[in-house]
Amino acid sequence: MALRDLIDHSPGRRSFLMGLAAGTAAALASRPVPADPPGPGTPIKPATGTEGAHPRSVLKDGMVYRRLGRTGLLISEISLGGSPLPDERLFFRLIERGINYVDASESYENGNVERLIGRAFKTFGRDKLHVHTRFHLRKSFTEAGIIASAEASLRRLDTDHVEVLGIHGVEDPAHLTDGRVLAAFDKLKAQGKCLFRGLTCHANQHAVIPKAVECGLYDMVQIGYNVFDILETERDVRTYGDYLGESGIRKLIDLAHGKDVGVTAMKVLKIGGRRQDLAARKDGGAALIQAMLKWALENGKLAAVVTEILNESQMEQDLAVVGRPLTSGDRRILYVHVAAHARETCHFCGLCQAACPRGIRTADLSMGLVYFESYEKAARARDRIRDVLADGAVSACGDCGACERACPYGLPVRGRTHRAAALFA
Image (tube, rainbow, N blue to C red; front, side):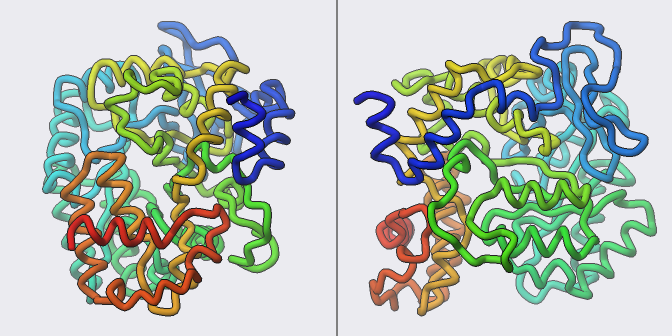
């Protein structure tokens, strides 16, 4: 099937063709780094644009560093996801190659991710690495519990502070301004144990991110953003007043950037298959991975792509895109891939979940399915799915189809829900 046929049979085809017609030149204009990659020993210098006293991006020793919003932190445009981190030898090599920002959480690998970062601090010095670690808001959370969690993270990290302390996986916007959360943040910040406040959001982004930006209390946000967000929905979705208008993660990035809230992107390599097997795939392999990274990084409003790097091959693939533009060949690979896989890719917008009359947590089940089928994280998939099944709502599903009618991307939500539930029933 030809490229045009693939696109013509995909959802969102009108926006798709408009994006293709725009071409590489217009897309590259938004990227704040030059086309030629920096070479070894390149001195720090501003790239295009400055924000206050801080440059928007700089080049140094082969790595591009971008400004994380109003924090003023300059972080590597390829940054490291900690679920999981690579082994210690490879982790240290990545730091030597210029990665200076690591994503962590109290829950990753039973705290061993934070312990490994702590060993890196001892080896490289505390100022070599910026860390965003997070706490969970479990049922009946308390101010004291949040503080205890953060202090336990500091002990595992073997440091007296983290650059960013965040809330892990916010889905309820009310949690962002909850008195217990704010009091804990205030005390920890006053004691110098965290410099900035942040969060990650896996679902219900269209309610959570605007609240985080507009309340003025959060300095950075981390959201899922990948090439499938190139497909804007063709119908209006009234999710947050009039100015969001339709579902689209890029609008949320624009909103945060407008208030100088830093944005990092996760789930950039969401591919409907295991990354470790890409060499054997017929739709691009390593070239697809690199094109996906470059597509995200051409958005100059992002500070970094946060991704897992678990072996030497992935390290070389990922770091090879630093400072590189998205080419017309890359773009062709991406559009073919999106056209082929868009109908199986959940954006975790949460609109299906909000529409369910039985209160089934369809977005959580979809996330569990992705953990199991795409990321090879069976334990995390089991925990998330069993937590949803425990409330009994799935068994009461009336198969009414409200979830699918609410999905702006036309996904088979009912089938995904039942498939996820059957995994660990």
